Image (tube, rainbow, N blue to C red; front, side, top):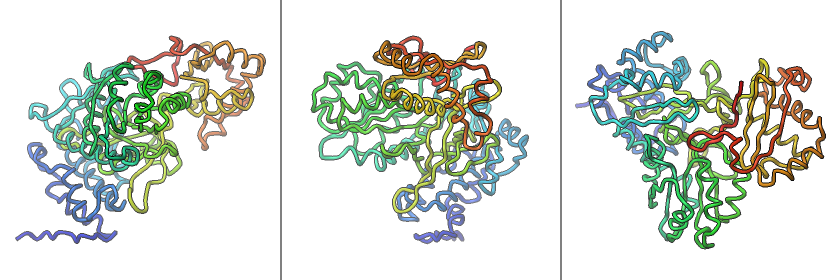
Length: 518
């Protein structure tokens, strides 16, 4: 007879660790060999068992229980990675020889980056705990839109199915249910491309197919005619695409019937920021539309979801990933503080990847608590590479743009968010010139307005007053208008036509906020 007793259905706060230990017992938390790893029970099964014991959806279970189970899973992941020689060397070098007893100890594990991912999961894939020859894996590839170098990651197929179901159910329950209502069929589309080994169409499509009660169409890039056909189907519709793919829907839907346009309820745009100008254009064409962020990456198909249009906060899916916002030492920042986004996929027995930096900056926000949903929240603050280098100082390009926009609006009554389709900083370091390029509809009129309102020196004054505000609260003593002038940098604002080639785009149509030149 087993000596392990099932926990009571209602778990007291102090029993969270005991419950986690019961859900993932000692013999599972530390597998004794590589051959044992494929036979470990999935983390999804532990989540389902936790729901049964607590008599609640996992996303609504108390934070202390979620935290205890997450920590127990992280302990299991570290023990699993220590079975792999490459991981063991990496962790030992950092002084990690066993599973972390606390989240504080977890933060001692070294951060991984895209080079780590490339070294561990490409070529001979030496970072896999269970070798590829075992079978049952999917290779997911990215073309490397930021760095230009291809990047691959490996997933267990069984765990992919679990994560798709968890994320899809969360989307349906907490993000889409309020907008896709009524008795008519409900539709969920994606225009993400699924070719040339790009992961987005496959992975996000896997999530969208698992949203309960919807009909899914993986359309890929669409023309006006195809969009019109899809929107002719009766019933409310939601569509997910890259930011540029969402922005163009205003143009593609201009000739659509009113009934079809009214049926478009939710636009989900991919990682990044959708310009205010584009939002206004979309909502003018589609009067019932709500625009929300779906933040994802090749390494994590659903990192954060914007649940409400009135708040930019992104909510993580409980039990899917450990989402960390860290400082330069890899330590967690406090609420309201900015740091780098680090993600650990909790569903990865055979091919774990610990503490991966995705190249994004986030602001940690207070977690959701109280009745209903209980989860972590954060807010997008820009790409890690969105940095303006002025002499020896670095400034957040996103903050610099916000400050410049505010200064220009005060001085000229022109709001760049309202007039610009796209913006991009071009930093000519050798010539010490920063040009903010903005694509607009009426180039001559806006250029004339800026010239006559600001005069020959007004734009430079706007620049030197705005840029110091691009430093964080704790670094604002580093710069002031005089110190910016002393760098010798000059600022230019250049208006160009919509879709101008002077704004550089990646191979998939993304517009980086910053481009450095020699």
